[in-house]
Length: 282
View 1: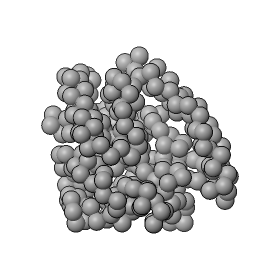
View 2: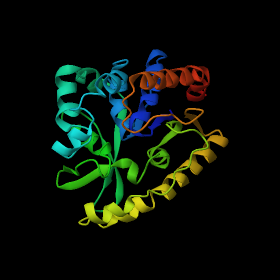
View 3: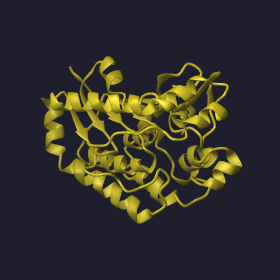
View 4: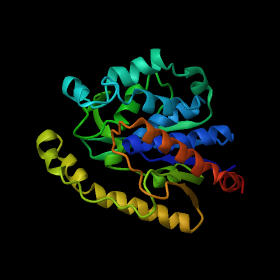
């Protein structure tokens, strides 16, 4: 039997679009053998696998103005724009409990994409248990310049999107022959050079590969987009993305705007549901 895969791009608060996509999947019983998430995409995939509808959306929208969740205050006081204790422990353990039992009983394998800052290579960490593997998830969403480097068993990691923003080739290598890719940018989008990549020479002077990665990130991203477009044109994959640019910043605080993006993600997917199911079953 052919394996069905799902790729979830990151993008900070643009990822609220993805939460709408995933809730539409839940409402229509659409499941996958393997998911590879990048940054926010990996975070939102957890609530999809635990079948907690609107949980990912609610966390983004309801807590975005809480300084413990995402703020300059958190960055200054903890070293992380997204507060680690609040976002990865208090919310899932107390405020909006994560359904570990449902997650652990799922047949879907979820991998978080992370960047090893020492080797400069992408790694894909299997998230078997969200209590034990929470740092593997956090590493995937630890944005450069506004997050501390995450230490996992002696290795150092940051956001997976630095190296592999759209790991389509990886999921193909894993044996998934029917793949759906969820992007948070429109079809015509191409990334431009990072104007503050030079900061890596200062902030990551112990990890010299980081400068080159950040300096050339736009080239790697645009090559991945070209491959996605090529595979889509051949009918080998199905892509879900917004028709136009989402008017939000990475740390957008406007809740009405975020809610509209959630609804957009849901509606775009709803309009493709028949095509998605046909693609998976063909």
